[in-house]
Length: 160
Image (tube, rainbow, N blue to C red; front, top):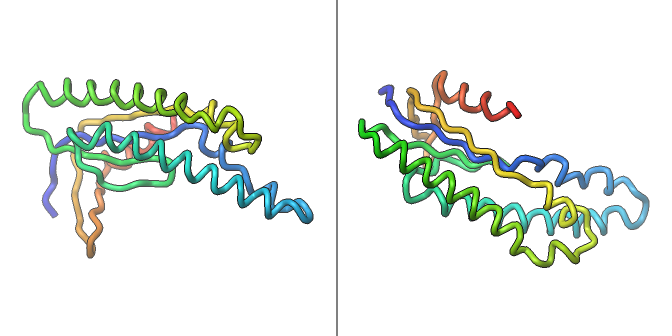
């Protein structure tokens, strides 16, 4: 396996766990499953929309590796120019702006009584970038990144 050097970037939607707390509602007699289905569908639409915004912001400067629930993992091989860092920083600003703009554009969120829509105002975008080494393994149609720096960037994401 060839070791490569580059940028590892994870964009994570913070507040997602609180946002998607439908498991408690499903336990309520009679109406629980019905309400939970509505909550789940509203949460799914919101998160899918926000993940699309994140991908659109970074796809021009990085390669999408995978979607990990409420996070999107990108990478970019180092081309040994100073401009790469500047471009990544620009796209980070663009992503944050586009994410916040999209949250405010979701007008049905403000009027919808379901909990995911009401909780959407608590969602935030957290972006972690690390320059390091990694290995890329292809298994069928999937590309998996591995190595100590991949683990590090995921650990950095856990910090507030």
